[in-house]
Length: 147
Image (cartoon, rainbow, N blue to C red; front, top):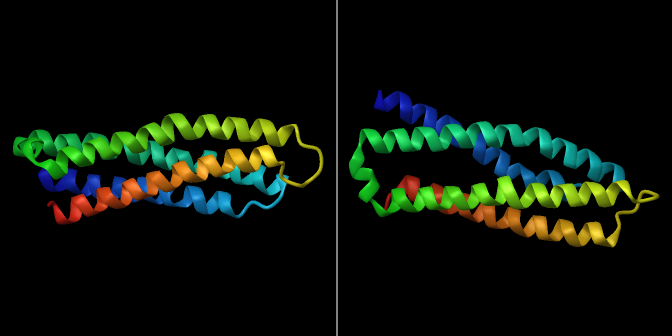
């Protein structure tokens, strides 16, 4: 059973991490209003991977911990759970609010040039995405090296 859970955990982490990594890549390519709208729509669709992968990641990680209860006393395991929740707050709370604001700004825009208000809002989102990517990187290090 442990090996099956571990397999699910690894596959779900790849799925969730791919979505986290691609968020800034998708958005950095937008140069016009039309491209930004398309990028935001694509980002919304990839969020399904993040939700599915993240949910399975949390559930399988906790199930692994309940099978081997000594993990709850390991610093790397507890730190990984805390980091997961930091990523969750960013991608479930902070970024969606920014995306809604960005879409609103784009829909109010006449022409194809990105408005300055959108650029400022996008920089905030890019910073949050960078924090999430750093958190993912630290989480991977914790999972691999288990310090």
